[in-house]
Length: 169
Image 1: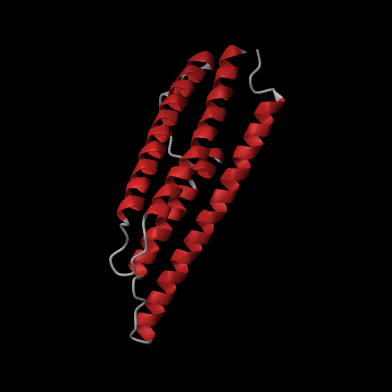
Image 2 (image 1 turned 90 degrees about the vertical axis):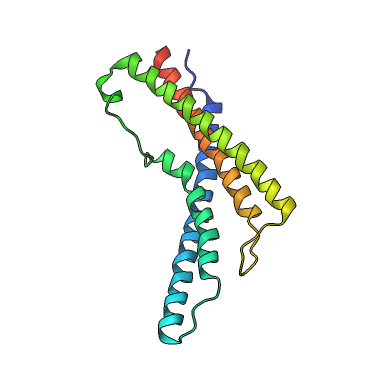
C-alpha cells in the first residue's frame, strides 16, 4: 500500500507548502519591521536625542510574528534542531520507526501548543491586555502563534505519512 503516491497527498503537501511560504513572508516582513524600528530608535537617540517611544514594545510584538511565522517553513527545509546521534546508527525499518515516534511526539507537542496559545489568546482578548506604553493589544499576536501551529502540524502529518509509507514498503 502506498500512502504518499496518491494525488490527494501531493495536493495536500503543495497547499501546506504554499501556506507555510505565505507565513514565512509575514515573518520576513516582521523581521524587517524589527530592523527598521531598531534603526529609527538608534538613529533618533544618537543623532536627534529623541529615541523612538515604545520601540522595545514594537520589537517584542514583531518578534512574536517573526518567530511563529517561520516554524513550518523551517521544518520543511530541515532547519529545525535534530539530534541524529542515535537515528543515524539505525538502518531501514528501525530508523523509520524511530522517525515515526519522533513525528508523533512533535505533532502532539504542536497540537497542545496551538490549542493552549489559542485559549490564551482568547483570554487576552477578554481581558484586553496590552503593552504598557503604547497599549498594543497582545491577543492578535498570540492568536497568530496559534494559527502558525496549524501548518507545523500539517508538515508533521506529511512527514509521519512519509515515514509510515517507508515502513510499509
